[in-house]
Length: 163
Image (cartoon, rainbow, N blue to C red; front, side):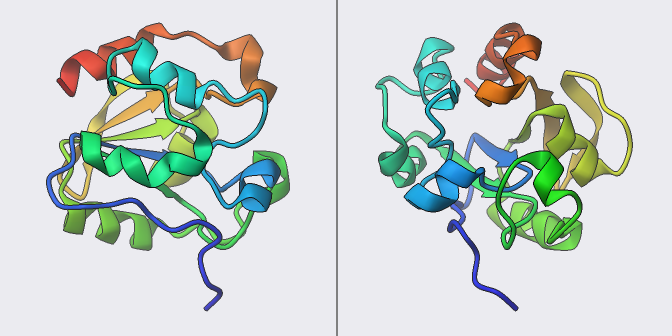
């Protein structure tokens, strides 16, 4: 088995774990989550009140200080969702990792990530199912490539639920 491109940031009892499909090209190159120049992830977290400070992608491990985790469905592929496709998608690993960490919520950063994890089409907002005991959310992607679908409101709803 290949080593993960980015390490998980998971600890027991987190408020929310964010999950993407796989690291983008810039993130894989930087060795940091959501490192693409047009990605809104790091600005969105303090904007919606999930963390009190603006962090840089290189500081991703600090999210654990605020009860927030990070993972991807595919730990061994990188690139755009179209490039990654189903390569390395591992729902069993994701479910086990979430069950072990036992966060209150798992939030998919984009519909493609949510669809890959759940195995069916999804809508933005809370979902009816759980993963590893955590409530499931699907949020508009923070990727610059998905700018046309951006809506901060579901992110605000999650922040309220995770407070």
